[in-house]
Length: 395
Image (cartoon, helix red, strand yellow):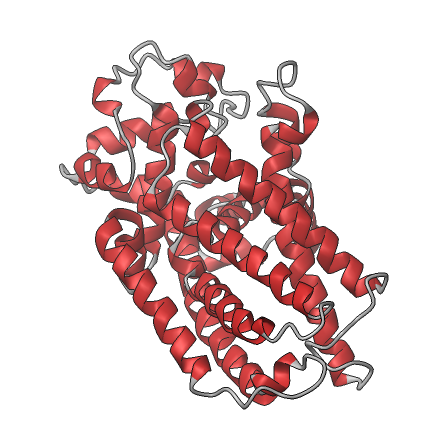
């Protein structure tokens, strides 16, 4: 198969982050010091060579691009200060833009001024959209979803999830298609796998890695002896993930209680109620994780946090504001005559909706794409021609 070369690839990747790989002379030190690399999973060196040679399809179709957890050790020990960790981050942003057919991913990853203007415009439109659909402020105790009618929020949220879900699936399928093309895989390569292999690969990708942070926790911690556990890279990262998922679960359960007519969404709930406890603990965990990540990036405490992109900041700020405004809205339910809670609700939903709407196009997409790549990597599908040539009954 003839490889297609793009002489502008490395220049294009530089638009997506701080890349100094022009200084790289391919010594291989970055791969040698990385605790995640194996004989089969050879990075960052191989991916840097793809970029230097202009091998676009090989770069964006490599699952290894997503096996890196950005511990920064490769950049710390690079003899040429070529910043391989920053290259991996930029290459992932470039890949996200290449998987997205709308062009929005490219804007948010490489055009900070235009992306910033779009963020402000989207947020303003969402706020005004809800503001024009509000009802008069109810008297007595706070009833958030009488001020912003529950039916309106439910319908708008459903349409938003349909749109984001469709775009997200398209991005994921495009990623799988590029990985498959690069590896010579077909649909049969995946669907002829044993059912047990599918479940094991799913558990490895979602349970052990995405949720359990297994490799990050065991292999990527180079500061175990200098940092307390609550400031370790894996725990801070996990706190943001676990907190977000906990808030999502609490929101779903609150919605279920409304469906079964036990409690209306957005009304008072005792602090000791299991769902309220879940939401409070998860929210605090997410705020802690995101705040710590922001502080580390502002202080540039190490190579892993020294080269933040516009997309990094967009994701962290939207997540932080969504979490904090959510806490303030909940606080208003416990205070007398806190009618400002109604207006804070509009702000909270505007930022939360924007965070979700931009999921396929910003750093948020990493969560889905990394998990997908980890699943494909764990499944290890075999190219069709090798499956055909294998004897019947062979292991």
